Structure formats: structure tokens, C-alpha cells
Length: 212
Image (cartoon, rainbow, N blue to C red; front, side, top):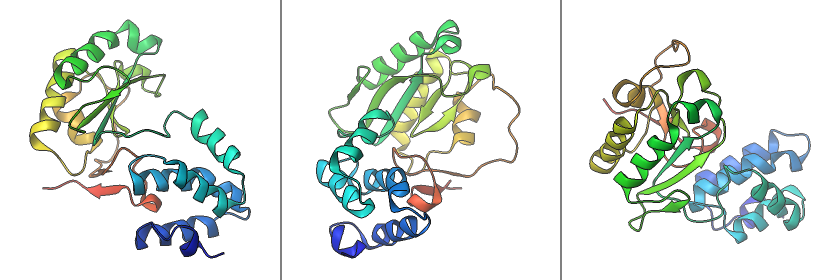
């Protein structure tokens, strides 16, 4: 059965991306994780139907695909807001006040940890180490990193997201206005960022260019 037949309800660009991803791996089952991200972008989260489609595309069972989707926390199986705000609360960030940052973000967005706001703008979560211990406390917006975030700046970041409603969130832009101490000096300025609560990656079609 062709890719287009299996995912006929997906957009034409995402059908083509799925086909390209499958062709990139000698074994189709190896494409399961990239396809789950692509399905997340298509539907806003991983629906049961989308997971069944990924199983059919890769030759895995539905149970195998669901086991992957339920193991990795970056796969969301419930509705996610337009901006997914992830606050690291592992030891380095915790010691630098991550709980206060999380509380400030919860209060500003009206969204308790682990939930999505009623208007669908925000989802808020605490996460384990995101590899920015030297820049603690660290926060991600749609997996775009901001380091050295103080509680008041975390709240300001949320107000900016609500009021400016950026189509693309770019880590360098957010770091400039809302961040603090970084793990190390970053290299070339990045103008490409995430357009949805899915990691910004070209083959997923989840990237966009920062507006001038």
C-alpha cells in the first residue's frame, strides 16, 4: 500500500516528507520516531489514528509504536497549546531557582504544570535535564532554548508570547530579551526557529525564519 494511501488525510507536503523519511532508512521501522514527530506536526499531537498509520507505514505493530510514543516525553498524546513552555527542574536548575521560575510562568499564563490553558495558547510542563546546566535555570519554548531565566523574565517571556503571538520562536531572540547567564558563548546567530511545539527540524517542516 502506498504512503499516500495510508496517510491520505495528511497534507500533501507532509505526505511527501513521510515518503522522504521512509526512503532515508534501509529499514522502514527505523523511521518510526521521525514519523511520529511529523504526525505530531500534522495533527497537533499524536492521535491514536496517526500512531496506527505510523505502524502501518513502518511495519511495526500499533502496540510497538504506542510503546515508543508513551516512553519518550517529547511525544505528546494529548492536545498541546501553541506554545509549549518547558522548565527544567533537574538538580542544577533546581538549585538556581527553577521552581520559582515555574511558579512565575504558571501564574502569568494561568496554566498549572502539566496542563494546557483554556484558550489553547500555552502548555506548561516541568522537565528533566535539557543539557544546559551551566545556564541554569533553563527554559524551552517549543524546544527552543533560553538560559539563565529569572522568575520575572519568565513571566515577561509569557506576556510577550501572548501579546506578540510570534509565528516563529527563535532561541537567539528569546535569549537576548529574556535570558541571562549562558552555558557558553553561542556561535553564529540563529534566525531559524520552531513554528509549532515540535522540534525545529527541516525534514519535519517544523522550522521558520525569524521575521525582521
